[in-house]
Length: 403
Length: 176
Image 1 (cartoon, chains in turn cyan, green):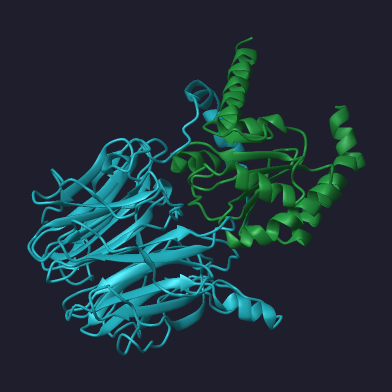
Image 2: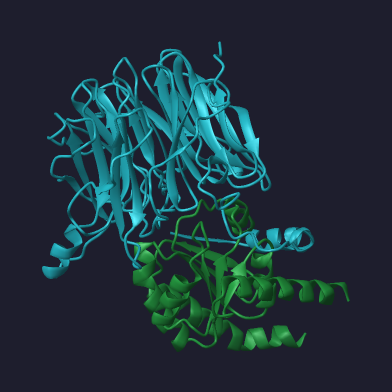
């Protein structure tokens, strides 16, 4: 895809003096500090436990740690370090540690590391059965030694933990056969013991984009649904969903929209998925395709067979990115980031009719330095924005109900 | 005089940062204002600026091809920018550049934790997908190639720059 213009040069001339004036010393890290503490985290992922406790897992200083909050994020317990040594954690833009908390209070975690100098990844998992006081020894989620990244975890009603990730193991077979290998495979497994052990990994789909996060939810008990950036014919990296028949049986690949983003690149920008109590799939994604460019939202009321016409999200001139959508009892909430050249803001919109109509976007948070993706988390009654920022630390913000 | 002072300041930042990296000074930090410096520093010459990253699969395939292109086209200024989010891997970056035959080109590495701001200076619409190649003519016209570039397209663009530069029309234009 080729674009031509003089815009860059014009912008250069305008920005030149300001940029020189503001040039400072090196800012070599996304992190505010290099300790394993929450204040130094670059990525933090929340989950509510059954008793309303907020659990947070984060990566900071090469370590993964967990802490809990009884007062909606105002204060946290003393953290428990999950890792025992500093690891080369996957710091890719779409990577983050994952957490689910089951009905008994068991905590299952997963995250990726770079296993070698070629940046091949490894998904590790662990579990706590003592309320986060200690975690089991880290184990790889699959015995295979090729590259795995972008794991996702979701908890079924019966306590089964379902995991999906992107896995490049089949590139070896392709290479041996003299065939071209594009992207990665969507692999999955599940755990019937709360995340202590996982079944053998299986392939759901070969030929997905290899560098974007997955979205994962349950369409119904026993039926996980995954959203991912697929590689369609001709190297088109558009989005698809797959609804599993059960935790061991993948379903069809169903395309969300024909954006026609043909690109041989790492977009580093994955989608978001939530399934409403009504069964509606709500999805949000980024594309830079020939058919449309920017952030988009759509919904499906037939398990992904058909989707609504994509709705543009955010202000095009403000670089809208990192959408996250979550359906709750009080409505469906969507957040994303916008950037005005100096500050990043989190924008919010809410739908009270299962995705047909959305409120005008409004700013609910902003920061003047780098930040994690904005995430949404719900305790069943209240939905919160969970956002880690370099300048202002970790924030949990209640989403106020809107008319 | 003010410009010269700004230049010395910038150089100081570059040297200090290179020392902080503890690696070859050939790898320059890409910070606020660096994009403007690159564009200004190559005015009057065709420039190819290539954005890539060490964890990007398609980038690993493209980089050696770009190394060969740079070798074959001394008339084009080739600049590389490692645009990964956490620019703390200068050794891996330098190693990949060396293997790709790009040791002697002007090579940068993102050196500001606030990458959204860095990218916004380069192109407000860029969300961070790599590889990405920006071709800048002598006149300052920028052509952006998103994703892996076809070397044939680069060859064609390069030939156009050379033929424009040598055409009688251009020479008359310069003589005005």
